[in-house]
Amino acid sequence: MKVDVLTLAKWVISASDRAHPADGVLRAELKTQRDLSPDERTRVSAAVFAFFRWRGWLNPEKPVSDQIEAALAIAERYARQPESFSDADLVARAAPGWVASVMDVSADWARALQAHPKLWLRARRGQGKTLAVKLGDCRICGKGAMADTVEYRGRQDLFRTVEFHAGEFELQDISSQAVGLICGPRPGETWWDASAGEGGKMLHLSELMENKGLIWASDPAAWRLQRLKRRAARARVFNYRTAGWDGGPKLPTKTKFDGVLIDAPCSGIGTWQRNPHARWTATAEDVKELSEVQKRILANAAAAVKPGGKLIYAVCTFTRAETIDVAEAFEKRFPEFERLLMGNPLDPDAPARARVEYWPQHFGGSGMFIAGWLRRPA
Image 1 (cartoon, rainbow, N blue to C red):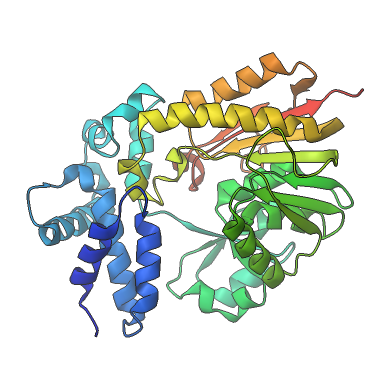
Image 2 (tube, rainbow, N blue to C red; image 1 turned 135 degrees about the vertical axis):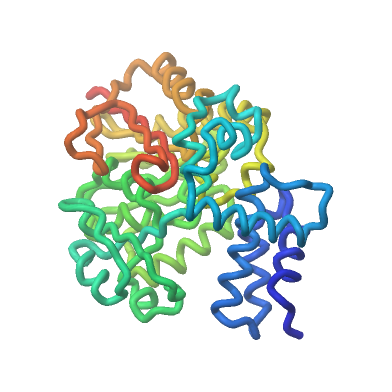
């Protein structure tokens, strides 16, 4: 039986909690609602995300349906008249109050959180312009390494396109793409994506390696590695192996690598523009606990880097405990690693640095912190 848009949005919101993120609940529910038109699906998604994005402005004592309508009206006003929202009001309401105690909170960042996120694609190497023409409603990000990074501005369901099923592009945030470019793996090298998840960055590493050499992909969750395999098959990526790893001292292989990428589990504050529900489920205690997890993973994975090899640490957050503190703790404990000066793919004119930060208000993607080291030659 077909349900109306508002009723479905209310159900998704009520079913969402810390253990059941809203984006996952929404995705699963839309799969069951086969009678919904594409326009209705878009409206349901817009209602759910507007509710969580503008939650700080809503009256929780009112019915959820009233709150949804209020959130949609606020979102429309912000799109038309962002200047009608004061900096102070945005800083105070866009995120929970505890965030200011763990990171710098600026008005520019708060404004970026409330803006509609951009949709980024990664085309096959050298095919960015061709893909943009095929899909239409696209903008090429830049030149050189960024010529295959495409912003999609259209409304079609990209997962249903011929180009997607042919493996001609991946949906991958621009900041995530920058991580792969900073890693800079070369054909024939051996790399380890130690926190591979469902494989977004691993597929990019393979593309940069021209499907040559070998990539080990690890994750503690077997179901994520199964999804990685399906994505790799569609993208025609074959130069990889998978192995479970929980971040402990027992590594999945005795191989020594030219490069190790640690895309560590984190508080995810850098994704709050795209995933507003997470703002209201994360806590300051999470940040503290995750910082210790990150330190442990980084320390254990460092043993797999060969002399002269790279170690890249990336987290989609800005908290001091998960970024600077983790990097400094690692450098103090492992003097055999020296800082790696990294160019910035999104700002080629910027000087090379050992630590790079991407904020959504600067580059239009998710927030990201990246640190890099080289293991000194034996």
